[in-house]
Image (tube, rainbow, N blue to C red):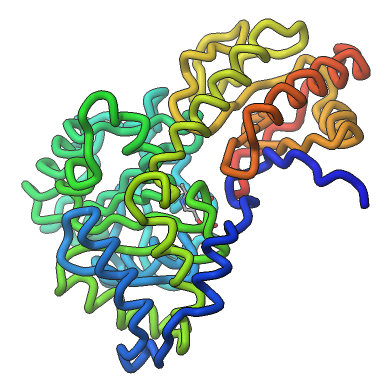
Length: 379
Ligand SMILES: Cc1ncc(COP(=O)(O)O)c(C=O)c1O
């Protein structure tokens, strides 16, 4: 059998652990639409408890989590304030427009993954003007993908919540990689409830760095989660014996080395070490865009979580093909970048192999024309 590639395209490619498969095989189940599935109920309670919220809702994907949160908070014709490069703006097939019936007022994402607080305050519409939509939601993304996975701090989240709440508007955090943001700030004493506390709803993915095969959880007050539950049914996400899918989530959310949260620190260390090696290679450039505004070389100190973004000074497709021939997969990302995302299926020894393969792939593909710019970014 050919050797399995070292797959850095996304943390979504991570596969369930043996403990997860075991938990799936033995999960107690019931009909979750009737509220009867004990494993789903346990996962929802565990997620809510970990983030310091009243209730949780298990959904199929991160996209569905953001969608049901929007449906819970917004009415048709309202408007959301979000970043121009947020997933909810760019990469969810315009669900906000097609399904929620709302517009997004987009602001510039900054290099640290934030939106300028003054710009958010200025973006609220005048509800007395019949020409304008009514602002109904503010969204933040944490960790923020297009800035190379920068984590947002509790202080910043509190600032934005205060602005939103001052206008009577809720805050939703798209925390697809919320746990990466928590772990990245662990040494600064940041906990999950600190980071989630200011937000009205937070969605986080189980299927990315936490390694589960499917699923996300949305947490918030009992009232907002009840509305999100209705919305989940509306979009066809009411599942039945879903405990077999929720069981790996309970494994992932275990405390300590039994779970998948604490070990995210290894992914961050692997990403940083990869970036340090890449930064010294001829042919590797700054990712540009908002990930690292300055031109020149890749700055490894910008790697705060599990994303490494960079550009190559040669044909990107040829470079990626050459890497693939060496059994290493990376992804064409937005803004002409390449993305390498670490996860639990990529070991420190794999990173050594990736460094060698990258050197060889660069040697294979001489410097040439730039890559195609595309703003959206998968996974
Ligand atoms: C920031 C962010 N939000 C939401 C999602 C959506 O997650 P899913 O692919 O599970 O729909 C992603 C997916 O990569 C993401 O990066």
